[in-house]
Image (cartoon, rainbow, N blue to C red; front, side, top):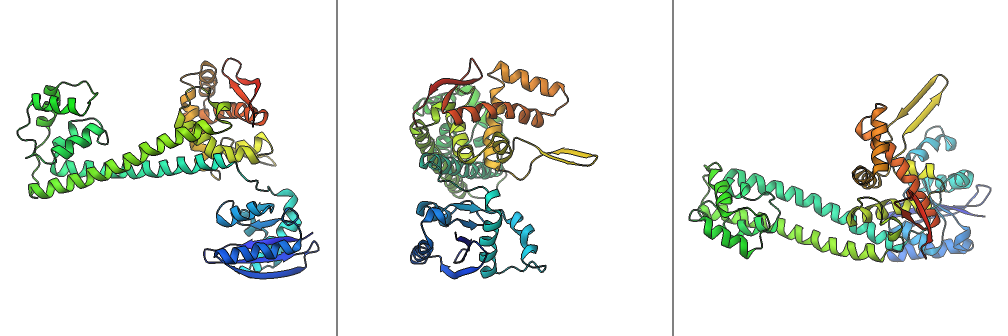
Length: 400
């Protein structure tokens, strides 16, 4: 049996193949081009079927990992820290170079491969949800930054434009700033005209024009030395940026809802208390790949950051917060777990009991999270729906 080590890079990779005794069979560089990767996969195929040639690599994702999985190779992801700790077995100097790392990765897979996890192709629907929710998160961060910039701009040049409506990224606030981008533009505004403007833009805040106008007039007067045309241009440009980002988020929300409805396992967790469409999509997209590869509940709890790190040596026993984990998966779970206690008496009782034992809020949420995660684990493994009346999966399996 042969083993391969793939030392990946942004422009060039290095691949080494060894036999089951640790002898080097072949080593070759791989340009990061379509031709280079295709030729590398063809050369690996010379050593037997792809399923019989495991490949060790220092990453869990990316184009190379996807191509190796598609070709049928067992991919062994090696954590860089673990690989660094193992370097002394190949020399006290812990030397690092691309050709040497390819050989060391292959040898590491040969000697320790039976103890390392092997990546399995994730459901395409799960990967789609993951990509969509991550992009939405990125756009949400961009919107927050753009709204903060708009707020700072209005504080300096047009304070009334910031205070009249509660949310600066709401459609009514953006429409108002487009129509009245400066104090001079709104100088002649009356309560009646403001109410007519709100009706045209379907304002749902149920605040009378007199109250909105009072907010506008009570705001401090700007002492900006910029001309009115420049202020109007600045406000309209920033308003357009916020609107474009919000439009993108709205479009992503619609696509995420459709993708979630089409996911084969969405029904398993759809009845979890107070889990919304977006949060459920995040849980399936981020926790789903871990669920698919986890061999035990303990592995699932550790990789999602819900379980602490326990160290016991002699008379010393410590339980500490787990920092090295999948941060996105933990955030998706913690957001829902905190919401669940407001809609489930069972969850609220567990949270309250944890607080009564002296646990702080984050600790109590993770304690409740481990109980919820056991239910999610059972639902996923048995492919049965969550039953809110029994706190366990139902006996109605979902077709894969």
